[in-house]
Image (tube, rainbow, N blue to C red):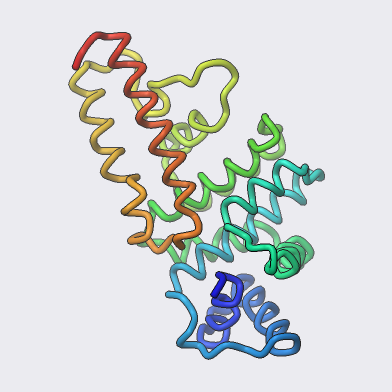
Length: 242
């Protein structure tokens, strides 16, 4: 069963309220009318549902804020959510519902911050996924960058965490390996090793599922690990330590 059918089933069992609950309710209504609603117990865990719907809603609002939805951004979004051909219409429906809803992006962001207040890494995953969508066309435009910074602020992400995410995605020339690892350029070799090991433990793809992120989104963790390892290798070679 694809994630869209699972979300419809979950909608029957979760009474979230707020803009995220409204989106789930609208999706459930679609399945009731067109396809038959799944039983609530067939749905995924609540945290997984919140992550999925939150990413869709904020991606839709980002597209609206920027004013332009490029083909590359749509492709990046669909890579993140692993859309099967038979689910294209469901994706478009939910994306459009979020884009057209009367709730502003800050309403979604604040509800996500509350629902995931004990999962700061999951909130960071959301910002990371949004950056991946925003940079799919080769650049983050000023409006997109401002949007992402405000979402991160609502989530309570530290500036260092936002800077690390931005350094992985926004590349004008070689990536700054220090920013990717969250370090100052004068960091000692031991600090570099320590930071790299800590980030590997924190962002390994195997831990992503444990944070409530659906398996369809392991591409987020895979991209993080690639950038973290690349930054470490650059510094290791430049400084000559093992």
